[in-house]
Image 1 (tube, helix red, strand yellow):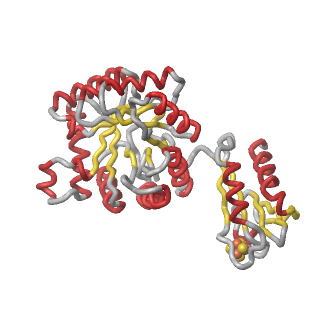
Image 2 (cartoon, rainbow, N blue to C red):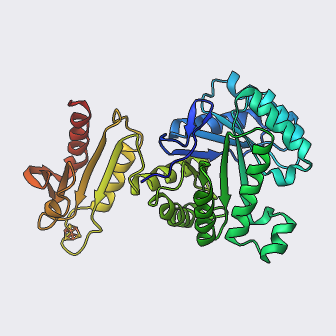
Image 3 (cartoon, rainbow, N blue to C red):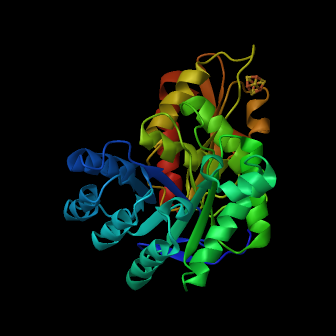
Length: 357
Ligand code: SF4
């Protein structure tokens, strides 16, 4: 059961409520490099990014939001602001769709209030982003170290500060590079509020270990219904973050946009066709295929002995023989396909599946 959360609108993309869990990423070129930023944003859009964030270090850079819109970028953009409330105000003025701040480092309450008022006037939500390194002194003294409870309390206190000035379109993110701490802190916020939660394990490493850490942390929460949007932070091309987020959501059955799910066996001594290469080829061919919202399970199995049976849940698939494959549907064999025709045959079947009512 998905946790019930309030819904907020980020430039037309809903976070929370019953909305599909959105996959976010962040540009990693200087915001002042308008063209480079737009190039990345368009690549993220093409990869299926739902919301993109830009770190804005100064007021001049905030004009990147105006520029991106002029250049046809349609994905909602989030301004990531630290310390200076004036940058947040400028980002609102320039067309950002959400502001991410840590009210704790914005300073005096009147500055936070100005940001909240500006966002409210434009109908923009605010994400409160908290991590272990940004904890208030008082909480560090109370808990002794940045524990999960301390981080959760910090986020909820900051949300309360916004509520106190009449602002309630709030998303909370609690990030930590410690998977267990991130899980515990998100659970604490989930138990104490109805704020939508943005999931992420931060400083998670390269594309491989980052995906594993995020899948472990996000997976634990998503399977318990916690999490409304996510970003898989990777030391890699931001497009990889979108692919990783999609895979995590598919793995826990929370991906609601259809697509081709490849089921493949690990191969063993019975395998006589090049399954590893066939799966790589098929995956590349279907990665961005438009399935018109349909979910299609396609199996690529190493042998006819166990393949069709083990992949009975697949809509259809291939089980490898010696230089050929056997096409099967719902576990029932249909006929032989030469090895060089395995991928084209599967693609043909995928197309037919998409087109049929
Ligand atoms: S499907 Fe066949 S080849 Fe693949 S792991 Fe199972 S027994 Fe081995």
